[in-house]
Image (tube, rainbow, N blue to C red):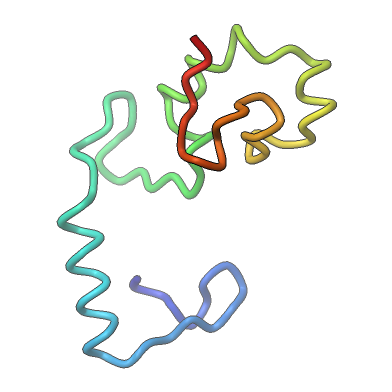
Amino acid sequence: MGDLENHFGENAQLDAATRAEIEAYLVGAAAPRIRGLSDTATPLRISELPWFKRKHSDEVTPRMMEKAKSMANCVSCHRGAERGYFEDD
């Protein structure tokens, strides 16, 4: 929220009131400190989080990654991903 002029290479500036409202929501909904990350770390992708890496390190084979192309392609392995359901059990 601090550099919306350069948000992943795009200008995503908002008026002050909208920016403040969104920032307040994000701060209020933010997870507590994440174990395994420093206080200054700001991961941009869920796949950069320690728990994600642990969960997928033994489960994702090179063949699965070849098919998925990216860890962002959740639906390639999780059939319920589009509905927010990721449990495979």
